[in-house]
Length: 414
Image (cartoon, rainbow, N blue to C red):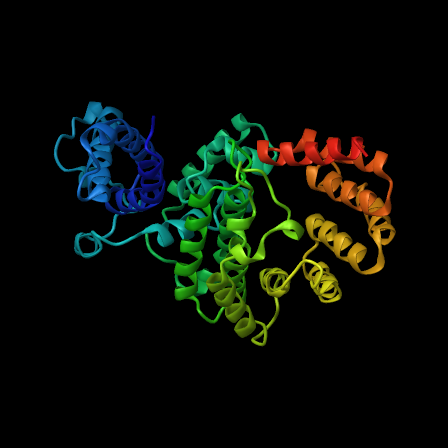
C-alpha cells in the first residue's frame, strides 16, 4: 500500500519541483509532464529504497533527466545532445545562470502561483491551471469544482499551458504595477484549494488536511509579501479560523459533525487567536472586501463559547454587508440561515424561495440541505426529509452523503 507520509511529501514538493524545473529550462507543459513522471518514479521507488536525504533535489534531478528525454524526442531531427539550456527558446522561462545558482534551494511556488494567474489567460483558465500545477488537484477534482466534464477541463488546462508559453512571461514575480491585476485570481485560487481540502469532493474522507495545509502555507507566503493588503490578510484569517474547527468536524468514524454539535474544547485556540488578531488588525484599514467579511463571520462563530451563545444578529448584519460587495448565491444562502436564526425559520424559507430560481445554486446540495434544515426547524418534517434526501443525492463526497441521508432517515423515524 502507498505510504500516506510519502504521498503527503510528494504532494507538498510537486509545485516546488515544477517551479524549479521551469525556472531552469522553461517549457511549462513539457516540464509538468516530466515532473509527473518523476513523482510516479518516487512513488514506486521510495517505499522500497527509502526516501532520499534530499527528496526535492532527487525529484528535480529525475524530472530534469526526463525533460531532457522529452525534449530530445521532440527535437530529434536537430540532434541536439548537449546541455538542455540550448533548447530554451527566447521568451521562455530561463533565468540567468547566476540567478539559477543562487536560487537552487529556493521555493519557487509563489512565483509559479502568480505565473499561472497571468493576465493572458481567462480567469477560469488561471484558476484551473493553478489548481493543477500549484495546488496538486487532479483534473477530475478541478472539473467538479467548475461543474464541467473532465475532458473539457483537460482541454482547458492544456490551452492554458500553451497560453502561458505563448505569452513569453519571465519566470519571476510580476512587477509592482502588474501585481494587483493578478492578485484577485491568486486569492480565489487559494480559496478554492482550501475549500477542496475543507470539504473534499472525492474519496472517503470529509477533509483533506494536505490541501488545507498547502493553501494556508501559500497564503502565509502571500501575506509576508503583501502584509498591508486587507484581503490577503482576510483570506489567511478566514482559513485559520475555519481550519481551527477541524479536530471537531468529524466523529470517530469520519462522520460529519455540524458546528452546532461540535465539542468546542477541541477547537484549535492558537489558530483562532491568530485569525482573530489578523482580521481585527485588517478591518480598520482601507476598503473592506469579501474575504475580510467572511473572516469576521468565522471569528464570531469561533469566539462563541457555545452554539446557543452565537451572536446571530451580528452574523446576519455581516452577511448583509457581504451581499452588497459580493453577488454570490452561496452568500445569499448563508444569509438566509442567519435570518432564520434571528427571525425564525419561515423568514429564512421566504428568502430561499427567491434563490430557487438562481441556476447557480438551485441544483446544489447546499441549497437543499439548508432548505431541509429550515423546514425541520419549522416542524415540517416530511418536507424536510425529502429536502435532505435531495441534498444527499447531490452531495459530492461520501461523508456528506451519509450525513444528509442520516438526517433524512432520522426524520422518517419520527
